[in-house]
Image 1 (cartoon, rainbow, N blue to C red):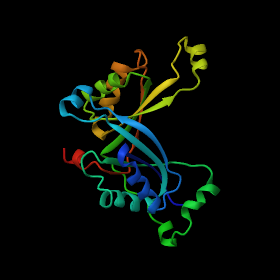
Image 2 (image 1 turned 30 degrees about the vertical axis):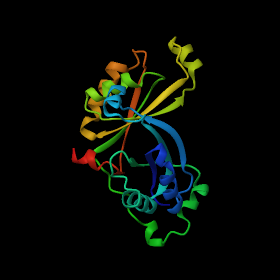
Image 3 (image 1 turned 90 degrees about the horizontal axis):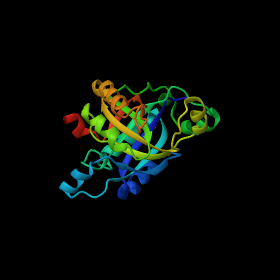
Image 4 (image 1 turned 135 degrees about the vertical axis):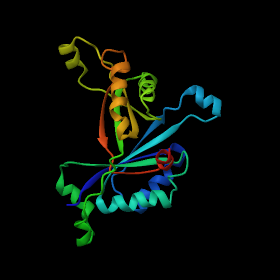
Length: 227
């Protein structure tokens, strides 16, 4: 079985069809898409005359050979490196269940492709995932920006286990949550997560928690890299 990766691609909502068509042409199965939004400050957006940053997040599992193909196509066919076009990240998976269902990913692969080594790790980037109470995104992002973060992408989520939390911790947690994705340089990760914990952590109404995962490969971050 080939090494598996989680592909996370974020596009402008009006261009989601272009991304989905590419995934279909390249044979990427099981793509899950959901609406999200960017975290551009309202003041900045008004100043620059920008529209609301409505986006679409696409999640899929890809094999080693598909990862190469899709990331190359996103760069050369979609032009993901152009400003405001989108970004794509590959996160390596350490384990996965359902091997029989997953065997479809390897169907048709050449023997030498099956022996490919895992993608080299991009040790200079990390994906920070933050979960906070609904309506507190800006507090979290203010803290993150103060420690060197750029923008982020927000997905609406729903928490579970709130009755258990109330029983053991004596607190009531809102079920409505927001999940924020922030891509950052590895050297900024600790400072960003510390700033979020101090300014918007469990002792605040935001009750934010964060964790990070390494990025194996990225596309659409050329201007981020040049900066």
